[in-house]
Amino acid sequence: MASNNHPLMIIEIVAIVFDHLQYIDETSSLFACAQVNRLWAEEAIRLIWSQGNCWGHEVKYLLKVPNYRRQSYANHMRSIDDLWFKDLKYYHSVLLAPLKFPRLRSASFLIPYHRDEKFRVQYLVPSLRKLEIYEHGWDHEYGFGDYANFDYVSDDFFLQIEKRCPNLEEFEIERPQNNSQAESILRVLRNTPSIQRLSITSNRHCSHCDLKDGPAKDAYMYLFALLAKHATLRELKWRMLMFRALVEEVTKTTTRPFCQLRNLDCHATNTAMVSLLPHLPDLKILRLDIDLPRSRYGIDLSILPSIAHCTNLRALKLSISSACNEVRIPLQEVLDFTSACNQLEQLEISTGLSYLIEIPGFTDSHFEVLVSQLPNLRKLELRLGLKELISTQSLLSLGAHCPCLEKLDLGGVFDLSLLGITDRVLFPNLRETILRKVESSSGSSADTCATMMYYHAPKSYLGVMHSDEFGTAVEKAHRSLCEKPHVFLLNQALKNLGKLKDCIEQSLPV
Image (cartoon, rainbow, N blue to C red; front, side):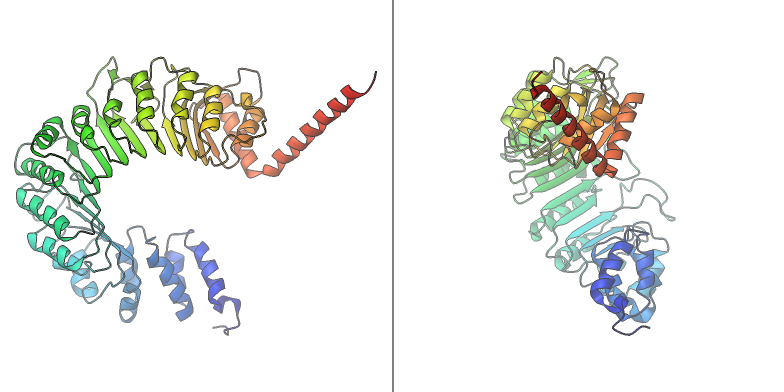
């Protein structure tokens, strides 16, 4: 090839070029570059494996490498995902078995795909930080379904995790099938103190709401009771349905359930969380999917008073699953909650469908009280319906009290032209803005509304959910301003010159 003085033989230049290539077509271009020479191969391999940007195709790319260079590539791998790779037994036993993965930090795989766990043991290395294990929903020998009577992860494999992964930080596994598996999961937690986050998910082919009586349900309840007594668990992701009877049983038998828990991500009924949350005063992050019953008349949700017990809360993401027309949250409960949890940096309340949350009597003055209690707010999502009297005044209050805001998704009707030109930009850090509806009550044009929004949030994208003609025009005009900011600056300069001319003319004697 070219001499060492050629620009494409200088590692700094090659790194810049390859850094752009990785965003064009995943890793195909980088893989081709790795076949050119040693210099290119070193930089391409670093990008292919170090950031884990193979999107689940690590095994496929590794098998394309010639046999004599495969270990060199494996030395650089940081993640591996063989969830959907076919003929895995052959490739593991013949081509991948001799390889070592000394820098592997994340591994995801299926058990059982071929029920020979030794093919996965080679991924259990001391450098591993994240491990995800799933059961497969289809097998040629056992067919499709829930393996209620089959240990899809053996006790020996759990022992291998304890022995080989002393630095494991995140462990995700599908729900246990029996009490023995539940005890094995807890033993891994006890013997691997570095684990801070545990995720228990449901079978991908079975509804987590449809947990029938039997060994699987007993194991599910047994594991929850064991985890409640675990003293070092700080993050828990529980994607099985958490119901009231289960929580009440645990709170009766355990003095301080989940005493060290700081991060909870769960799917639960309303009554279950009302029973559990008062026992978690130190919780900092709560991601909660609430299941509500079907109702044609709407449902009154009273969960915020229970969440208010978590006074150290920094982030709340409340997603409401309901088949009813609307979900109503009492106004006073909302204000009391923000007063108790005034350290919130993220507040999200939404439903599976768009803008079906109602807070009866909620107005701009109440909104100002709400945001004045949350000065550290960075992300706000309140998908309110059109019944709430939220208008441009709420945006002015939000800009005055929450200068750190980075993302906004707010229901209401807004006339952006009323924001006006002021000495201070309202949202200097805002990156994304989604508003329910934009209109012009003062008769201003779409360009004027877009200009006002661009002035007060120069770094933000603007989206309008109610896609009428005016809202679409405002969104389009704002996009044009973001793409050509010099046009905005020129227009502002011309307007200022016009104002200066008027002042001069008014000051001259008649």
